[in-house]
Image 1 (cartoon, rainbow, N blue to C red):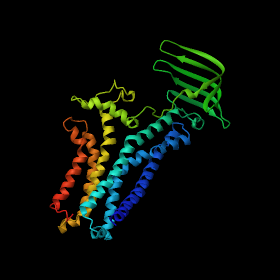
Image 2 (image 1 turned 45 degrees about the horizontal axis):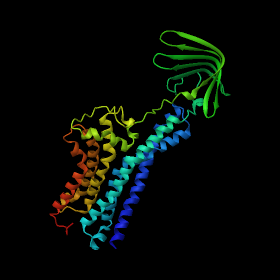
Image 3 (image 1 turned 90 degrees about the vertical axis):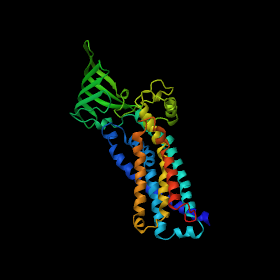
Image 4 (image 1 turned 180 degrees about the vertical axis):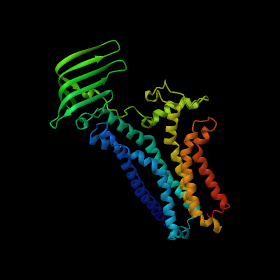
Length: 382
């Protein structure tokens, strides 16, 4: 009988969590997708590239809201059970409140594992896939982005100006400025031209013009009657360098292992000789904070589950009873806020480094002991 009661209770929490988390994730995803429309309007990527890229942001959004939605889910379901007197079913079947709290604490381990899996593996992988897809994708919307009498610079180191753009795709009075490096550049001027697509790559066919190569020493011009200008050689202006959020977690642990074992911890130290090339050029602070977010912050799920579970322990004072739910809710929100603020102090001082690392476990132990103290260790009361 007890197993059936706990099964229904856990399913109610899970159902509310899924509905709330998917709703919030979808809303945030839509807002973020709108903000990323410049991938099409400014950077010239196709709609297929755009939708694939923004879809890969879903795991990241979901991982960010798990701890908050999980706290709300437990808090809501217990409050609902309490208002409808369904909690009496637990007590009438001989289930002690401490056993009820322990069940929620154990149940929260499932969400802890889910968060760790998302943060350590799924989210970095999805973010990296999105960046690689953007990097390798062609700028398919280029023909639609070109406008008359307007400088177009959707590609890095390349600017295009067209005096006239006809409906049949033909161009008139074309100006192209290509920056080769800091010392060299190339200017192309043509009377006419047309954008053609060959093997999924765009080529600008130019007629009757000249190419001027410019460097620090001199400049020389070559005239042409017809030439092809390959646009596929240029990359999008979208950031394609690997971000810290996209790095492999195991590699990051390997990069910081020796540094964290050292007594001379310098958070601003730049890693340059790591066996993992992806870590080179990064600071210890950026890698350390990212790993902290991935592997330590999820453990605050255990703390907030205990706080929400303590709703079943009603204070004896009528004054405290009036604000019991509000106080617990504010404590839970404060702990979630604390988890984010702890990131600012991480790596600031080697003396408090391990305190911050083990803070969520310390809070679990302290809060659990407080529950026992408040009830004077009378487990029957619990």
